[in-house]
Image 1 (cartoon, rainbow, N blue to C red):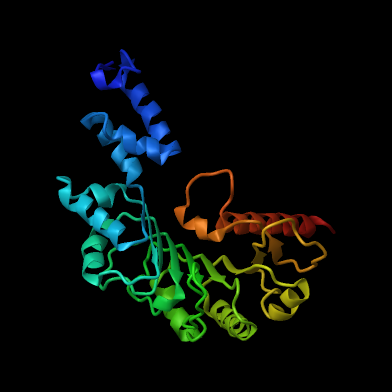
Image 2: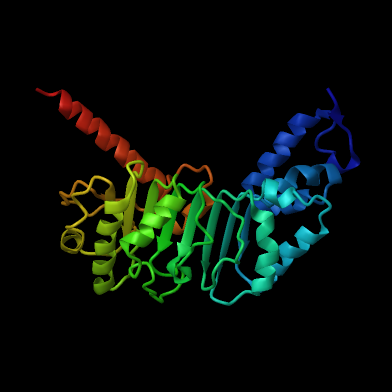
Length: 310
């Protein structure tokens, strides 16, 4: 077995390469500052750490976009980004240079989770085929986003980081969603964020949910409506038309303990920040998607037990 002998890694004298690599990769995953330091140790170590650094990319400024493009252009390996970049989040109130975005997108064909929280559409010819998609609804229609790989789609009823409330989602009819399901045959999970939507818009969204569920294929599993800081009596009134559908869940993400006393089978409290779910990284905290799947399994178990009772 080869050993690691380098003046730059004096902390690992005669340590087998694979063991040293695991130690350094674990350190890089645990702390990004450490990862940035490690890439300066040697070319060999950089080759180990770079895929970790670029696995998740956040573009929240024009400067950050320029830095990502520069890194892309300086690499001798044109397949590096498509191979190693798995999660991308683009969010900002400013407008990015569309030509620069168009230069970046062809390199992101391997992205698994894409969050596009800005006020401009994805470039035409977008090649990403994510399984997890998070969109601000200000860019809808999103015909250049849909993908046969897509299983989970989260539509921010508003831009999750700002207070404007466009209504593009509510303006889409059942026929539009029938086409989306046809173009996304693997889509099983759909989510609307209704955190601070005005009541009138909530009514429109709920009416749309009823229509969407009417055209959803048999493989569709769950429709999540996220709320926060809403009175319990409002929940019953606002979602009365969908709470009876076993595929629909109202999840209250209000910070703090559950406000008990709710008898709706499909209403749940889960203290969680759903804006973090685009990262989809293994942690001790479930994503909202995972929480919903857990409730589905529990419900199926309960019904299975009840079916056995004569």
